[in-house]
Amino acid sequence: MVRSTTNRRLHRLAIYALFSVVALYTLFPFYWMIASSLKSGQAIFDVTFLPDLKFNNYEAILSDGVFLRSLMNSLIVAASVVALSLGLAIAAAYALGRIEFRGRSPIMFLFLAVSMFPQIALLSGLFEMIRWLGLYNTLGSLIFAYMIFTLPFNIWVLTTFMRNLPRQIEEAAIMDGCSPLRIVRCIFLPMMGPALISTGLLAFIASWNEFLFALTFILTDENRTVPVAIALISGSSRYEFPYGAIMAASTIVTVPLIVLALLFQKYIVSGLTAGAVKG
Amino acid sequence: MARGVMRIGLNATRARTAWLFLVPSLVVLFAVALWPLGRTFLFSFTDAFLTEPDIYGYVGFENYFTLFEDPLWWQSVRNTLFFTVISVSIETALGLAIALLLNAHISGRGLMRAVILIPWSIPVVVSARMWQWMLHDQFGILNHVLKLMGFIDNGIAWTANPNLVMPVIIAVDVWITTPFMVLLILAGLQMLPKSIYEAASIDGVSEWRQFTALTLPLLAPSIAVAVLFRLLDALRMFDLSFVLSSNSDDTKTVSIYAREVLVNFQDMGVGSAASAAIFLMIAIVTAVYVTVFRLNRRLLGV
Image (cartoon, rainbow over all chains, first blue to last red; front, side, top):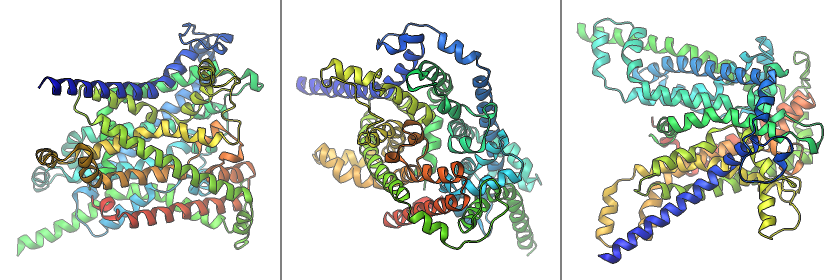
């Protein structure tokens, strides 16, 4: 008996030791980013593990109007993509999840196939389309283009979710002569909270982080989103590379995502796995 | 009778509603995906330039010949495949290990799950910048620590050395995307029935045997789906190489190659041919993978 408790304790200790290794591996780069961002001027080139708590880099980057503008742009794009892709997906998911009609399966397959398209394969055709729509070098080009990776995924996840909701409530509403739009708004929307949070968060994160389209469809600094702004920060020479400013900017972009990840961990994980594991 | 007629009428109305609700999404996806894909294929047979895409003539397969004669294209294909195979293998093995660890019934694992989500959720550009700074040859923390421990005398140029830059990119990608694997595999693990493990324990089956004979085979479908998502992602990798080692031929991926021809050289014909080739490459890999692992029912069985 004594032996088995000791064994169990050792086992538990080993697991916590491994937890610590994984946590250190995962989190140290973030610590280093934040610590570096808080060192001023030349101090960043001395490797000291404790930060100085100097905010010069933040003052510099935030007094630069262009960076604030990029933050604003990212926020506008991500929020618009979430609203638009959820609005479209809720309607489509109602059709695919609640109504039996001919052509349902081919359409589900189409959405799945589209979600697997590599972005690069669309670049030249999308370039032409965006110019034709007059969206080149506007935030609209990104809101439009980001539908490709948010809309099919949202439709897929929300359809799965809607299918599993009970049948009776809706039937009663149909018998009462409620219009489909009203059924979706009054019956399904209130029940879809968790699924909407999951898909909305994932769409937000994906749009906030996207790089290839943002680099290609935006020409001028004042319309850029943050990832591109950070990628394009450069010094006048290799030795003047402004790592302090880059680390401060990176910290500012990352903090909202870390907060989201910690607060809504459950929803993000369930959204991520909904597409993959169900079935 | 009357009821039956009513039902048929109702079903027809319902079907019309379904199409009405689908139209907006279908229109958007047509405009943003299907039409552009078709145009990309069309442009790959023309001599169009990005500056004036309206003016073009058909040149047959000439762009594809140009593409296939370019050694840099083949190098970027090799780079992409090497990167994909190695990074996805490491991420799967490491992801499985960490998922098993996090599946232990112990307090603190919820917090660990949240922690592990963070590298995946931040922009790849930020991760690339972060690691670039830690791997800096003169002022980077990694070289500093290695020097302190006496392993090296002079800083290693991690991202400038042609032999090291690909392993470095793979290592950073492992840091970024292992969490994704962990979460998907963990979700699979949590769906396994507990009763079979209880039965196995009563029968005195060792933990290792339980892992190889029960966990792995039952988990295989979840792992296969997770690997497919990672494959699709890795084959189109762009931002990590672009930021960490821009312009290095040693880490040029097919996506970087295609964008360079298209945007930097403005050559819409050859750029589109490269894009079309990438599309076909990824489509073939996906089709083969889905067939080999018999995933079609799993993916479509919603």
